Each structure stands twice: as structure tokens, then as C-alpha cells.
Length: 57
Image 1 (cartoon, rainbow, N blue to C red):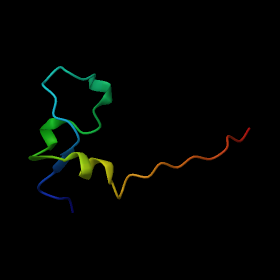
Image 2 (cartoon, rainbow, N blue to C red):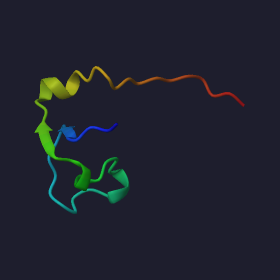
Image 3 (cartoon, rainbow, N blue to C red):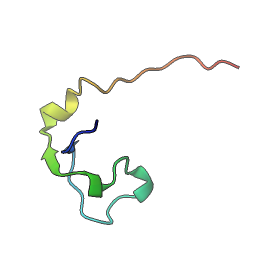
Image 4 (cartoon, rainbow, N blue to C red):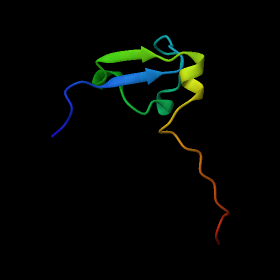
């Protein structure tokens, strides 16, 4: 079962052609709603985590 509505939370709105297509993770055809985040909301992303570990050979 899949959701019927996809909501994209964006830090910055861009005009078409302004960013490299390879930087797009979800094509716009699949997005029904766009919610711009405030500066405070963008700084406090609870799901996104930065994880680092030492390289293994």
C-alpha cells in the first residue's frame, strides 16, 4: 500500500532549471504539495542524521 499524497518539505524554493537534475531525489511529478521550511525548522531536522565512522580497508 502506498500513500496517495506526497508532501515535500523544502529548505529553499528553486525555479525550474536552477539545480542539476542529478541533485533531485524525488521527481516533481510525484509531489502533490510543497511546504517551505522556516530557517528554524530547517535547522532542526529530526529525521536527518549525520553519521560518520572510520574507514575500513
